[in-house]
Length: 322
Ligand SMILES: [Zn+2]
Image 1 (cartoon, rainbow, N blue to C red):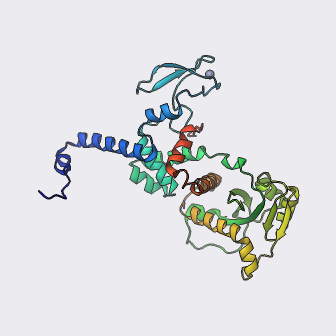
Image 2 (image 1 turned 60 degrees about the vertical axis):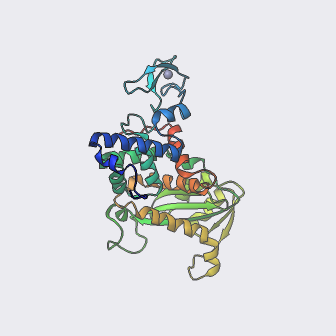
Image 3 (image 1 turned 120 degrees about the vertical axis):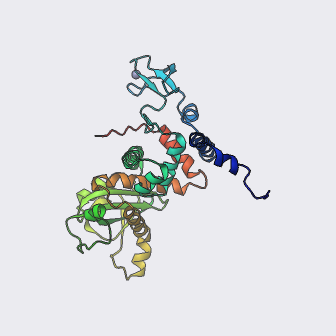
């Protein structure tokens, strides 16, 4: 016998399809447990959702038998609502197992286009698309809490609505036309980013304020490229100015604006992957980008996938198909 031969090979080859499918799921469950610390939704429920508050009124629940699928069921003592561990989360009603979800989430962390994710996870396109929106729902409003401080760079970047829906590389008009979507970006010296959709065309002071004002801590220094709308924003935020004339041939400008410029080009590169997206969803994509940006920064201390899975387990977010 070849000492390198896999001792399981023969037995696995001989398995009937049905048994092989079971074996595959058992292997996936164990691999998932080793990767994210949880192999099944039941394990996840006892780890993170052993006593989930009532989705209707927020009361603490009492246990109420098991669901048909064998999961813990709860009943609210105050309003009588019956629910199970993952009611009100993105996993509600999902018939797929945790390893499938973990693969899906991992691929989303690599920003793999949805067609690829569907193929690899064995999901139909509609399900994969819906899952992605469920995940996006958990980072809805995520940026609202981000306040940049001390030294902050701000800028805008523009993309054509038509680039999003039809794809890059197609012939398109040059210049800053009205149809271009504006994304206001900001990043501080602590590498906290913000990216918000800011209407069409060059933004007014009002639009800049709508987009960024709540994200700037009073007393910070805001570095920008002398755009008039920026000055109004900086004043309203009670920050101080440090402006540089936009000139890509000027090394001082480039150095000073490098933080914001880098963020703009990372965001563009990120969005290029999602050709065919509905521009109405652009803010969701940006929220996910900013969320991952922060997760990636801490990935040495806190493994990325484990952290994202935990976030999704804990997040109350229901995506409703309209
Ligand atoms: Zn209740």
